[in-house]
Image 1 (cartoon, one colour):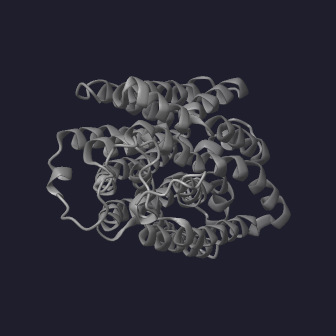
Image 2: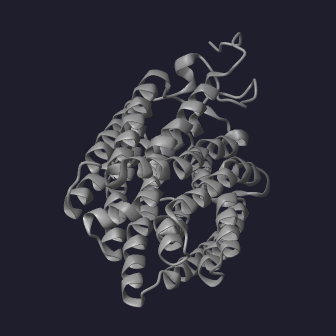
Length: 409
């Protein structure tokens, strides 16, 4: 039976909570490291290679759970997997703030990644179950804006906390990030639902005579995920995003402070500016992909990233850094939003978590390699400029790979 009396479809509640899940699992758990890297590097005595390796440890943990998390969500339902994953990430962030050495911090960053992978991948696929195909790109775009909200809040607040607490400021920040994420884990368990049928509803945007997709209960055709040429193709394209954007974001503040002459507060302000410009990027590009097709939207976004990363290295001035940050912000989280929509389109809502988890394996490989490679380049050359140019070249490969996706994507 379909309930029609409620004015607000419960799918929008799921979308709001899902956006907060992204805020915690990615915005705080991953991107918080960008602005905390400079004081952490000093406190723990890390060189650039170790700083990149710390980011890689987080991404290896994310990679380890991304595939399993998606598959578990397909089998048991996303709500519990998301809630437990967020709780793990929150606790690990608290312990990251207590670390006294590089290896200890690396372990807790890896555990944070495990929790992020178990929560972020299923929540993005969950939106595909709650929104009909013609609204799926738009919904995914709103969901990824959780990362933008984090950038907006982290940018100005972290420098103030660092000023207030001195050498212990970065530890206080991780404690706050972890506490917020634990609260979001409780919210996810309370308010998320695995499927519209649990509320007697059809997906948002479904036609009146359109049958709702099946909920859990029938057998899963796992082979259709791993045999799909489209899934493999988009997975390979996804490597380019993981590799390139993690170089850019991991060393964003470090580069501005060490080579651009910025203070911690000024770097945080530009980070916040990027966040404001990225706030609607997933929504805009998700909607664009609904209109012009997924592959052309992907190609355009990768093209903008190619330019943004190159400008960061080739135009070393406040104007150049700002243009680069704005360009990246305008497209920042749109690729994951489009990838989530593709999985829903190709595999349907029930297998979408497994498909998104599978292509996140490729994405995670790129993410895990990027920061360590960039840090090693910086230690070898004395500058991060070449690392940003490498990121630009890899993003260009992503644009080419997107443009040759099959017709109709």
